[in-house]
Length: 296
Image (cartoon, rainbow, N blue to C red):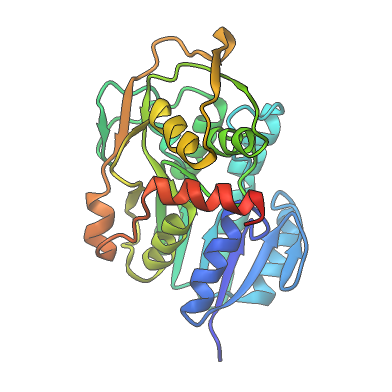
C-alpha cells in the first residue's frame, strides 16, 4: 500500500510545496484543515471529535502540521491561541489514538519564538523569549506537544522568514514584488537598514520532507538559509529586475522600537540531520516571484 502523508494546511501557501516534495517521495498526500480540493478534508482542527474521526479513518504514516494562524498581526487574538494551541493539541490526541502510530510527526513552530534577541546569529540553544501573541502561541504549542513525546515521534521546526510564489502580499517580500510589478513609484516601509534571513519556500518544503525521513524525534530544528539580507539589498535586486528604483517612504508606525539590526539563523543542526541544504539564492527567488506575477 502507498503510505499516506497527512498535511494540515494543505491549501495554504506552504502546503502545496510540501505536498509536491512528499509526492515525489512516494507518499499519497491527504489534506486536512480549512479549505477544499481533491484529497482534502475540510474541517476546523478545533473540532476535536470530528478531527479524531477523520484522522482515525486516514491512519497516516507521516504528518506535517502546517495549519495555523501565521500572520503576526492577525486581529483576532483568541483565534491565534485556539487555532495554534488547541487545534494542535486536538491533532496530537487524534494521532495518539490511532491503532498504528505515525512514523514521524513534524510540527511547524516559528523563529518568532526567539523574540528580540541580543545575538546576531540564532541557533536552537538560544533563549526563547516570545514578544507577541503569535510567538507566544507557537512556543506554547511546542511546550504542549511534549505531553505526547512518548506516544508520538514529534519533530519541531522553527522556520525563519521564507517566501515564494503564492505568498500573501500581507508579507514584506510579496508586498515589495507586487509594488514593482505594478510599477508603483513609492512604497511605505519601516526601518530598511535591517538584515534578515530569507529562504525560498521550495527550500523549506524540501527540508521538511527530508526531516520526515531523517529528523530525530524530540529535537527542534531551525530552518533558515544562514545568510542575511538588508531590505535595501532586496530593493536593489528588485530594481534591477524591474528596471527602475522605487521611492521609499518610512512610516513611523511601521518602525519597531529597539529592533535588532542583524538577525540570521544557524542551520548547522538541520544540515547535520538531513545533509546539504537545497539552498536557492534570494535573487533567484525574487526573480521567480516577479516573473510569475508578470505572467512571464
